[in-house]
Length: 197
Image (cartoon, rainbow, N blue to C red; front, side, top):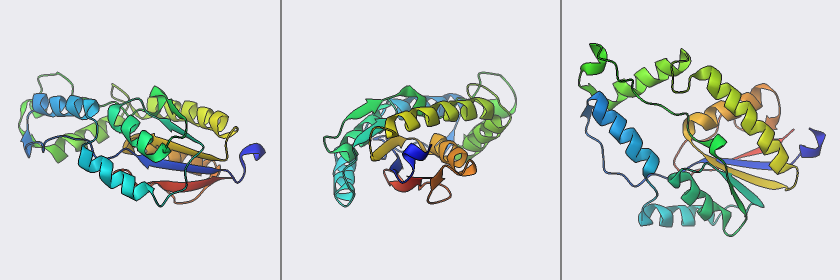
């Protein structure tokens, strides 16, 4: 670990995906379709312009590691500014989906925030597709890869997703392996700077 001491790690959530606003009230099916569209979406030209302007004030990284989902890949290209990019699905968002079970709750029309709350509950109780235990295991795999990538470069950037970044950085902070904010910014495209200890 001493080989990483003092090296810079930037982490950021992808930019805002190019999607129409979803309805306030949604059925389980509508919400699951929204999740699928979110994963397939890239960035709008307007969002790309916003991120280009934002990243002008940041140092150019030596390497960018990114989730392979379109919104993350496109954000990584903008932050990289011609630096090498590695796509790695281990940095994807925590997969979520409402189950196809005909219960009273799941067959109703609810505001989107109720569905999100249900998914958070499901994650804490290790309900598939990926519960807390699996996310923590994946975070440990991601940390091993970050250490490997960072050993070759002084300035590494990671473009991922808010849920997975919160798990990843929490694990690094609990182990005392990085110095910086307790948790990363989760605003769209906003980098957070950490230093390896």
